[in-house]
Image 1 (cartoon, rainbow, N blue to C red):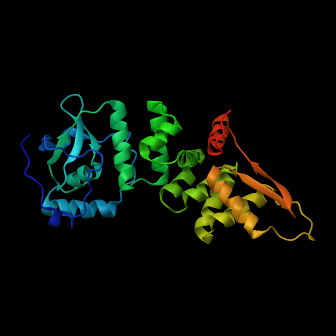
Image 2 (image 1 turned 120 degrees about the vertical axis):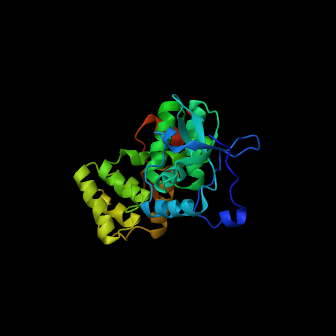
Length: 290
């Protein structure tokens, strides 16, 4: 391993398709060294799973012409090998470009720090799709015993956001793939959770793509399938659009099913929850604790 030459200047570097290190900042004391690519392996719990072939090829072409401008970050593993903390795209593209070595910095991370850095490094670049993000959050909760509150603080998101995105993992794998690829949105995915039959859920997901169905339209379809049409006589006027919008706002705020039954100048608001944890989350949003 030899000392690497410093990267290109900011002017040229800014024109090259590259990643940047946001959370594992390079310190002056860090040594940038060329490491053998064959001794490096990716983090098996890397949140990001989908790598665009087109962007990867463009990055490989850039590396062939200019080299790797930004070093990757590694941590020492066993048997003279190194695990990637940040920069898997650059490592993959360097292999594609035919390089045998890559400039890198080796840092020491404990397991919990390593997982957090890998997650935050991806989140800060917004490279993760919703399913990858949910899998990463669930991994942090399961493996590092983080509560949703603690996780929300670590990644700079709201507790409601964390809860909502984790719900996507309840979808079956085929529907998850549609969310992962961006064919349907995470909001569509959450709405489909109200449909318990997997075949019907998948059929609706494909219909969303075919007919370009909005989330609001999907909610109406799901409601009709579940037989939840409002039981009102034909003489009663349609639901007030203001009430409908307010109901949608409450659904978004609480991250769960909310219904408003309004009749003239009276009615009731129902907020549904499906676990004790979800009840506590709703109570927190209402600034009330049991």
